[in-house]
Figure (spheres, helix red, strand yellow):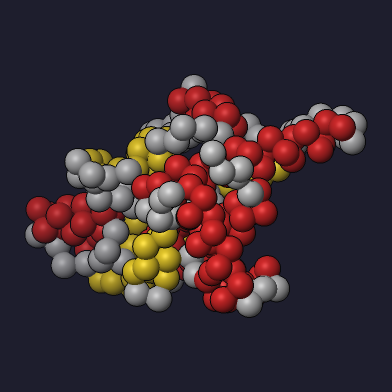
Length: 303
């Protein structure tokens, strides 16, 4: 039986994380041809192709996914051994989190809060487009992806979707909009300019269905795919934002923004997307279980 070459395994992991020979070779300070030769040697040793080419990139085969899972476990064990022998006071574990770039920062903080400040935990947080993050999940460079866009699933889908929170959606604006006689949702929607999520979001689809039922043509001040930008526009009084209150919970508490009306029947789901793994990260199990014991729903608006 061939002896597994750990150097080849480390190079394989670098290519799997990058997705290209060119990028991995540059980071490893190797020539592309030398790196390719080393990967082929590993494939020969394991008697399986580890990559298949798609366009300009490389995608793991099924055997490649298994090999990478084992490689991560091998190097994680080596790191743990090194840390223990150096008597660093305990093994530090890492949780690699990908978050949709437009996702509420407050939700991200609520998800990570059980791990923040722990001396034995390192949080690696990357943001980006959903397609890029899911690719990171596929190649095991991420443990979990936080999103409010549920990925399409079918019988062949590799993803596990954990719904962490389901938030109400409200009309949020500056305190000046709350003066005078109380107005109904329909009156607010007809009279006020609105800051809306973009057409691609499920929240927007639900809102469009609502105004159609009410027979209202809304005055759109802005269409925004970033919740942080929606919050800033609402603070600058560009219009009423159609947004979950959790996104602006600090402004609501401070009184710089107010919740004018809750849009009944419209809710936004916040999810953690993972993959079934032979060696799941124990921190991931821990934080998801913590979320199941906690609700991030805000209390109903008084009155």
